[in-house]
Image 1 (tube, rainbow over the protein chains, first blue to last red):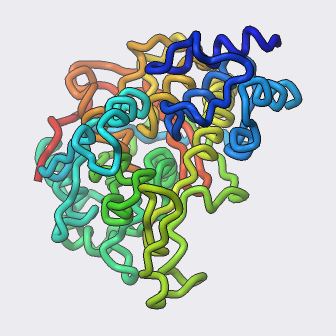
Image 2 (image 1 turned 135 degrees about the vertical axis):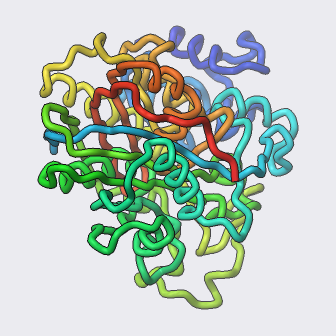
Length: 75
Length: 350
């Protein structure tokens, strides 16, 4: 599992936010589109593409895409 | 894991009833306009049915049962079992099945009782009714399953209000040699509070403080008598437990997954159901969804889907069905059954 691949798949979850504007260092919870629906979409993506389960606390504890990647990687 | 078969039972008919009143999530004020489309596309729910104050889950089930019994042309004296599955009974005491026995004109020799289950209730109900019926040659049974969950939610809570909808159903079963239904039923009470109405029961007895609203976050206001739902926990539960439950049932019973005609899931959340479908490696045309038009009707979602999406097919010929219910409890289960030209009338509106 690579950060670049994770970031791309994370960015692809969004519909209204341009994928180019989401980088490893992006503070995703500050994105206008982020909300409870986006959280479920990201959880489903991580389950399907990386076979890992993340919780609400994991999402709250991550600030950037790369910090979420680290949490997922260490599961 | 409780994998078992109930012999000598057969489903002869399924019907469902909903209230006439329709709510549209595209006009749901707690969600900002730009979020409504995203909600409908992701969760999959556009329209919801809402029972007026004078309509209960038992009224919806009774309407479904009356229609079904008329179309089956069954003699009501032959019905020896009535089980009512609900989380929204008419009264705290007595059980609602007794009222339904009287309302439907069933005999005094009929067994009648309630079971408190939600999302898994239809599958569990089939096992309960079937287990009794298998020892009663010549007998007929009614499984009535329904809820008016909209009466349990806060209309100021955007985490529950756009999800829930009301419906009742009736399923007719008959003692029938050579037919059977297979089950895999499971429970995990560790996360019992993932879906809960915390107040008003006998653990937290009713008091006036329970009526006070708390704002948990913007758009999420409720009191202790309203349903609370931890969406992420339930979502992860669905992703974790449902596929192995179904796979184990099919492998234990030596049923080829490809031979199943339709997989009918509890209609919780489209994103979750599509994730489960993909993990199961089942084609989209084998997994009908009713949640766009009817929302999450709790215990009734499986019969509502069968009636609204498959009734013509079920009436016309044979079908191999895998049913999967999961949620509150946490409780979940799957059932495999084969039907043949059952009575399945169009959706009833009252």
